[in-house]
Structure formats: C-alpha cells, structure tokens
Length: 275
Image 1 (cartoon, rainbow, N blue to C red):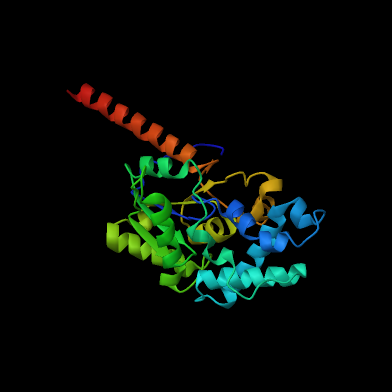
Image 2: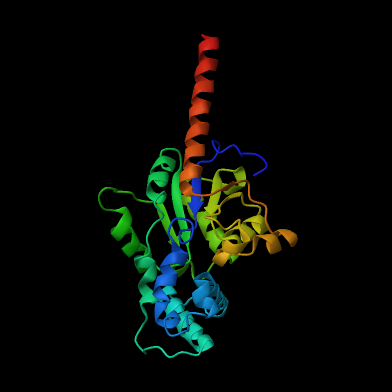
C-alpha cells in the first residue's frame, strides 16, 4: 500500500468468503488427494499442489460461465471429474468429498476474532459463490458454536442470485440488498468490499467503481498467486485499483480498531476545546 485509507467512514463491509475468511486452497488440496495420490511423486501437481488447485479452479470458473445456475456442489464435483480426466486417472462414480468441502474447510485462525472486532463498527455481509446449504453448514460447524457465537448480518450466495462472481449481477444484488436491508448506499461511499480473489472480486469492483481492499493471504508473492489471480498480469492490464492491502483479516481488523480509537480520541479533544 502506498497509503492507508480512512476506514472509519464506511457503514458496512462485504466479504468474499472462501480464500478470504476460509482456507480454501489448503482445504481443496486435501480433497484433491484421490487424484494426486494416483500421480507419481515427481508429477508437477505433487511437487507443487497449488498447481493442481489452479487447474481445478480453471475448470470451475469455466463452468461458472457455462452453467451460471449450477449448484456449487455440482460445480465442484464436475470440476473434480474434469481434473481427473486432465490428469488421466480414474475416479469413483460417487460424488467426491470435494463437493462438500466448503462446509468443512477451516477458517484462518485470525478470521473469527477479526470479524468480531469489525462487527463493532460495521454491518458485515457475505457475497459468496457457494450454495446456501454449504455456507449454512460452515456457519454451524465453526462460527455458531463455542468459543464463538458469531453471525453475519447477511449472507448472499450464487444460488440466491443465479450467477457467479465476477458477474456484475452479483454485485448489483449486493448493492440492492445493502440499501434495502441496512440503508447502506455504496454510491455514497458507505460500503467497502474485502476480498482475496483478484479475478472474481477486485476486477469487477474496479469495473463498477466499487471501493475494495485486498486481503492477500500471501497472494502478493508470484509463487503464491494461486487461485486469486495473477497480480502482475492484472496490474499490467490495468484491471486493479484496490484501496489497500493487508495480509489477513486480523491485520485489517487491527487497523480498523486503531483508526476508530484515534478518531474517538480526536473527537474527545475537540469536545474539550469547545467546552
């Protein structure tokens, strides 16, 4: 970041979920083992499992465009089959574990503590490409049980919307919901998007003029670009313009806390001078 943006003027934050809040890539690597285990140890996908994830993600994204109303469970299962065909290995005809992966993949350690800090200052909205049942199961497994009892203010899914990000339809759905449900107007600068994925989130955010911050999760490093998109290529094509970058939700939340505390202190000093 060249400068740290003022984060105190927003009323709500919208989040990409998988990759930003949930460890999507490592969860997916685990669920791709039925394919990877059939390949020799010297295969590039075993030497760098993130490469297999990138190939899987390419299949998934193609299906987003070809089958925009397909449930995410079916998208994952079909992408798994396509990846197996690409690798030249056979897989059972039953639905693979990866189809339910988003209900099991774990939050990053900083995610829920960070969200608890952020909820003191903003409405928190999920805008995710998964299905209703998958994200409901995820909440019940990790968010809505001790030591946490965390709930988002709204969860918007591809299943509800009928398309997948990066479609602008998904973001317009978010804008309309934020306005009708919380009286938050993105055109007045009241909504900020917080996401890991460059391709699915930050590129359409720039196209729409929607402010965003990047939770990079290591994706600023060329060897860790992974499924979030190629930073160097997208910058070269002038497709990105996020307001700031943080390594994690935890780091972002700490900056928000710092800014609001500083603002409160400044406001208190102004009141003292007036009195």
